[in-house]
Length: 49
Image (cartoon, rainbow, N blue to C red; front, top):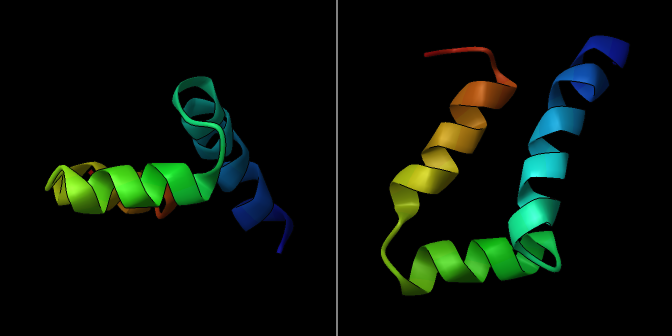
């Protein structure tokens, strides 16, 4: 569990820099058609490039 928490912290910081909340980020991705941004976050979380 600890390893996954360590991977998600930098991702959460990046989202907080640009959005008020994760919901704002999610809605932005959906409404602007930027689903690749969301996929990039998931890839970063799982350390897959």
